[in-house]
Image (cartoon, rainbow, N blue to C red; front, side, top):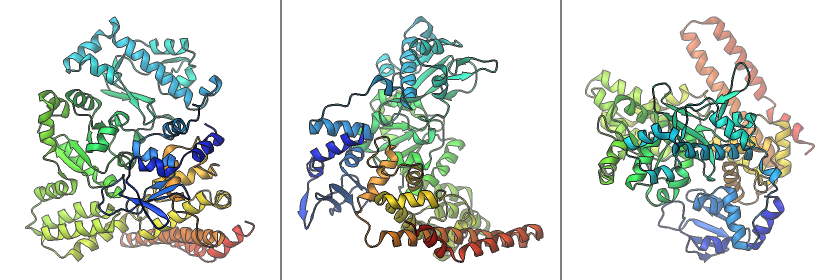
Length: 579
């Protein structure tokens, strides 16, 4: 889709009429106000600016243009939202020339679509009998197999390779898509053999990759597509594309595996999703939060399940969302429970508790809080987790709760949390204070609103490191040449949503050049201050260890950082003077 077509869509539509289909709006002053459709509230904080054709929620922070609104409300990709709005505006669907469809990532998606078709055909063929027998044994009927497009990769070294070649897919493209692997002696072979295949569909509805479950002897039990330009495990959630409507209505339930999701769906529970064999991360949480803040995590009742629950604290602490947790009966998984009837699973979900309550109880059950040794162990276990919480209100609440249960002063817990934060101050993603958040947001907003600012930052400071992953993604995109993410049809959806939210805040007040100088100075000086803080922390450790060589290295590094700090503002002004 070209830029001119996007402008035609924008000019043909009024954001007020689009939003009004989902939100009851009332005019107050120069804006229309209503209850936010993206979070629960009793007092309207959601505003639509008809003059600027933007929306902004002053409660949850979401904002953008008409494209972004539809993406956020319906969970659509940008391409899907654009086509829906084009249809609404009476603009003819875009026709793409055949040659362009195979360019870039499109060729990878086409290779995956061809592979998915092949796997489904093979499942219903004589070769697929072992897989059909396996699925029958797991209680998966043909209708569910069809719904999830489950297939079978035969015990062959090149069956898929031959099909792809016949369909005009070059082996090099198939390799990039993670469908085949190159052989040492030359040539290629199929990556998946003798496996039940689960297509992994992204939010645009296209097959991004596959998960294969072996049905005979061998390892690994599950094998995923290798990482590719369209398949990143940390950015994909199995079944989210199909489950998003159910999730918007009743929240998301995160289970462990593909078969759990499939069995629950067959039993009538449509809001289950799963990660792709990896631990839940911040990217997964952000993806789920596009559709709901009501998230329930389901863990096995064994020791590994409980450890996984504790690991889940960190990505949620960073997001501010407090998920609920269910620990299944020992030896049971959602697949087993689904076969007993969906009401059995729903009953278990009703026992869900906040993750922090579970984690606190786990620590207190392992350690005796009436003994000094036990209290110390509990503090050492829980304060690092509390320190990860970016919301200062949540940190304060958790600190007081822990202090109350231990019978100690809240100041003791707060001090230990500060120590834990300092221990990780030099690590990427830590030390995320309100000041840093404000500086990073301001710089990103300047770059979105002012092309000259974006160009200057790209030229003079192309390697800045943000603590916020979304802002880092936007910065990296713009540094690579994306001057206007909102007008670029090829801009990744996650980058577009971030840019749209910043643009919805309106034009930058005052002198943009002075603001850029001030912001770059604060950004870089804060980075130096954090570096000095880390150096000082390591110096103390080196002195305690009587490590003279390391101490001297750190003193030199400290001196260099202090020299860099001096005259920083003047250097930034000189670099930007030709702007």
